[in-house]
Image 1 (cartoon, rainbow, N blue to C red):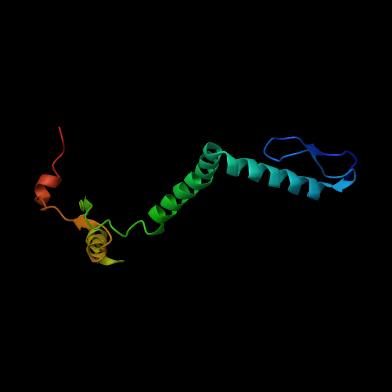
Image 2 (cartoon, rainbow, N blue to C red):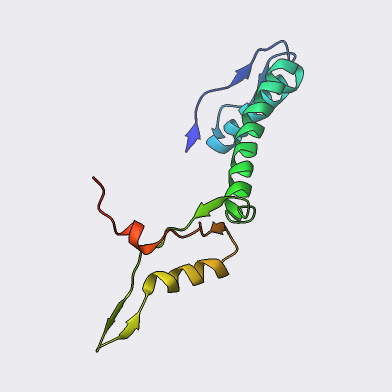
Length: 132
């Protein structure tokens, strides 16, 4: 697409009036406007600081979030999580003796990503008493 008008910059920062011609493509006009804006930005230190802040702050925010989520279990050994195992197991002809709760607890003890702790076990009779 071709622009039919003459574009003039009459700014004190650009010096005298500059004519870009009467038949310019959109790309050339866009580049001329970009150059003019960069010149204006470099002259005004407050605008430069604000522009850099708008560019840098979202980048820092993204960087901190990426680093935080990169290895979520990297420093969680100090978190103490109690394991409550109230599974009494079962015994029948099909599976024999099976205590799935003890198997899960054994697997959790091997996992060192979190601080799994097994509290002292209360007697089975106390854990099967109804609450009233």
